[in-house]
Length: 636
Image 1 (cartoon, one colour):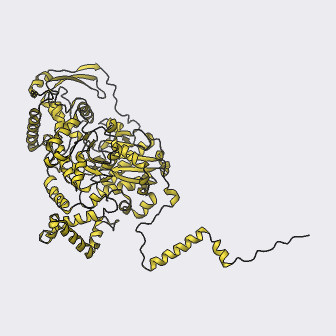
Image 2 (cartoon, one colour):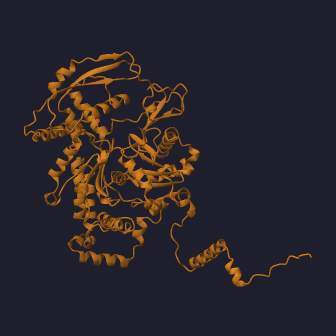
Image 3 (tube, one colour):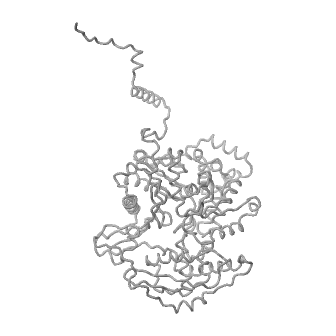
């Protein structure tokens, strides 16, 4: 018997609806969404451009943490115990023979070698000496001052001893004419070779000035070259594989928006990382030390930044950047040693190798221990390429204490005519970011303004500054408008204290800008000023109880006790009575303070709450800098 296949009957409408595929349902939902949009219902400003499967939590060994500093680049996988650290410098070969050689200076800076600067330096040194001699040693006796003349007679008669006719140090081999050299190789390029030396970051910002090869695009290209070289050579990751990796980029607390934008574009569009998180150094340093709240003092090679961090948020009003750091202490020590007859008379701060030697002498000899006094004998070696290894004897007195104390009396650096203190500036706006704070101010409704004015009147006398705004000049009014914005855009990110900062705090900040920008604040005064800018007394007490010192600029013996003593003596009496314990932390968990910010970035990558902060390559390509306003964990 033959079986004839039969055709199934057509399905009913109910069966067809039940058999509707998920894709068809999605199309239906999209159609409804288009209808709602046509009726005027608003969609989110930035729709999700990355499919959900790709937003799963990534393994930490596929995340690269980059902490670019003025003198050192620290980079590594989030799972590494320590990052790779190399000098953040590049040497580029001349494109045409006969070009003049250009080299960015390390210890030489603008504002030096002026008569006014020399007088200022002498006055600063007098204040340092007075502070040294006024404090008793731990045994209760007064220090005996040591004059430089006492060491000079000995040092001037010192002649070097030859340890070896070959120093064992060689110039970088450039016989194969590489286009560029990075890190240590760049530092040891022979001066006669046709290479320009560039530090892409100075004082925490991109090193853009009028010299050759230092335009914004050239500096970004240098960063791309250095980072890609290190990723391939030290992390052993091929550039073509970076599409499987993500990046956490650490930026300064006081940042230049245009510079950050260009760096993010370079990381995701040129290096090819699939995603990026941008975060501030102070917050990452707090993460790395295991503290939820702290006044973070980051003393780097070129700059010192102070900022109060509370519950993972950097309070904008407390940010302060001082234009001096460890390299200024090194140069100050060299000047003091010269006064004492420094026996290595050929030493020049314009020579890169001599700068490395002076850096080593500072790290070896300088201290903040006021119990160490009197003349002491030391020795050091000079090893330069194409020269014998030399051994020098050196006698020093108070110079080893005076140099690091210049951080508290910055007039001793002798820098004049420079902007020494920077505060967070208002955004100038970006054409690619239409919904910025200027937009928020322009579209703020009159109802909101009147409601805010009524609330301020009820709050008490602090709001009187805004009640009288009609009588203020336009510049004052603009700063007050900035104050209103600062809280308006913080609601979703900042803590309650940060989002509700008083109007008087903003007004005081405007006064502080004009008061401090031309003045070099000492380190202790900068810390006290930053804490004083916190919105509430409870926050201030938290900050006094947890002052975290990071970076390599204050790694001196007894630095923790010295700073703690100065803070205790200068803090307001009202807080001295209520703060149980003023604590200065220099090595939390016995960790190298230079690595804390990088380690904090690595910790950040492991947090569940971090997953919503990733900016993906496709999103950046489509929406650009607007993504930082949407995703950054700080107010952009």
